[in-house]
Image (cartoon, rainbow, N blue to C red):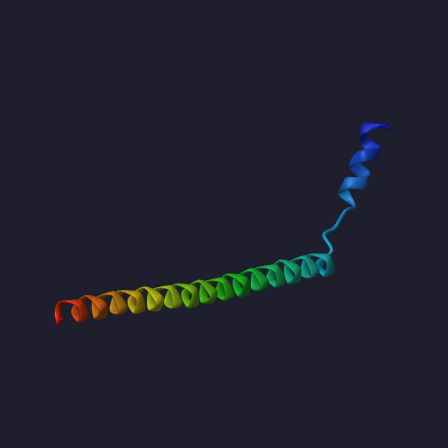
Length: 73
């Protein structure tokens, strides 16, 4: 293939605005899905931490109640 033939093909190439729009919509969709996943993960972690802290506080309160009960005998 001659060098000029390749230049003729390349010079006639134009960007497809429909293709670019589809690409942009797809990247926006992926970004949105990722943001939703991060938000859901954050909420799940917060709920887990909240339950863990409640269980820790309940266990500490129970230990404290037993300690107070044993001292009052």
